[in-house]
Structure formats: C-alpha cells, structure tokens
Image 1 (cartoon, rainbow, N blue to C red):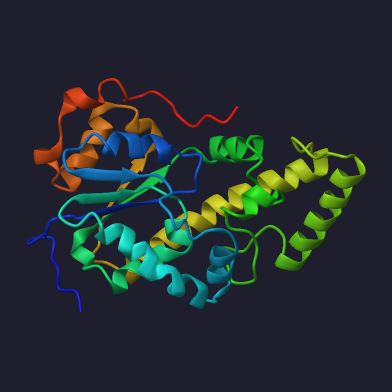
Image 2 (image 1 turned 90 degrees about the vertical axis):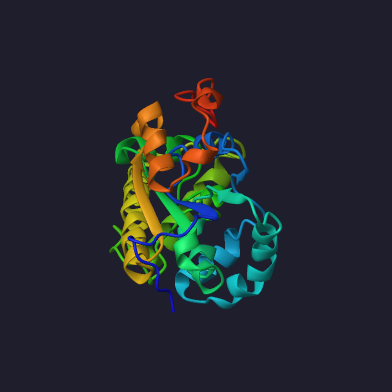
Length: 258
C-alpha cells in the first residue's frame, strides 16, 4: 500500500512519459540526459511493443508480465541514479505493471502533449498510422477493448486494412505507401482517435495510481527554458540541473523523419 503524500514527497528515482509519439519524446530524452546523475533513454529495450503490446491492450497481460523481469533488470541496473525512459509505449503496456514493483512516490511521469492536428499529420506522413505494419507496432488501434469509442469498429478496421494492403500489393507499393483519398481520411480519423484514447488512458492511470507524481507539458512549452524548468521544479531535480548544459539543445527538433 502506498502512503505517499504531497506534504512528504520522496525522491524521484524513475521518470517516464505518457505520449502518442510524434510529440517530442526523443527530444525530451535528450534534455533529461543533461541532468547530473541521470541515465536517459528513448525506447529502452525490451521495448514491449508489437504483438505483446497489442495483446496487453486487448486484455491479455501475460506476455507483458513475462517480460517485466527483463525491463526491471534494465531499470535496476542504474540503481542510485535517476533512470528515465521517454518511450510512448509506457501507457500501452509495461507502465501499468511498474507500480507493482516500484514505490509509487518514487515515480515521476511527464504527460507530453502536442496539437492533435500536428500529431495526426506527422504520424500519417511518417507511415506510422494504423494501416501500416510499422504503425500497428507502436500505436493503439481499434481492438474491442478501448476506452474511447473509435470511428470504426475493430472488425471494420481489419477489413479496411485488408483492402488497403491488397491495393498496395496490386500497385506494387512496396516503399512509401500511397493512400487513396478515402483511406487517408480514415487514417487521419483513426490517428486523432488514438490521440484521444492515449490521454483517456492517462486520466485512468492517474486515477488508478494517485500517489505517483505527474506533470503535464505541451511540446511548445518544452521548447523554452521555462517549460523544461517546470519539469525540474515539479520533480525537485534542481540539484541535478545545469541550465548551461541545455542551451545548445533547447528548441532544436530531433527525429524529424522526413
């Protein structure tokens, strides 16, 4: 039972991120890496995505639970230091299991957001949407077990994906996938729904684990010293922070994926 209170906070030992991706998680990892005594990762292995993530989202927890010892080994190998992993897979898989192993008051979570239209455009442009194999490995798709009602059912989603894959095969579209207008529209709708589902899961997570420490940050804020320093202050990381070390990083985009 966790008895942490905001009046008697404990030291944050582990930092994670709730995000959709295409929100600056790689950039955030670079910022956190400047902190003294911090081991900062972006999508640290085991990543816990692909099939095990999809199974977890459908309610089958066993594959993820079997991988937890490996994930914990990576975290515990940095004992005594601040461990950070900004992967957006957190809220879709192993994040729900971590509170069973780490004291809640020692966990900090950054809820990172970006404008929904920009996330949708970027996710679709980088071939990371729900109809691509790459996208299905990382994002949430309709599965019959979602919090927010998707624009199409899981059955219709599978049919649409099957038709599109046939279309790509006939067009010999083996590289960059070209979407007919109807399917592009459906892709963008599903990505925007995924955005809503992600942050609905974030609210559920906060309700389920109220003693974990949270802060919500917009990407635009993170592009400023004041925005990053809000994170520093929230998690009481002032003794690890050197403003001069982030001046060459702040506001400079990474992982653009042209």
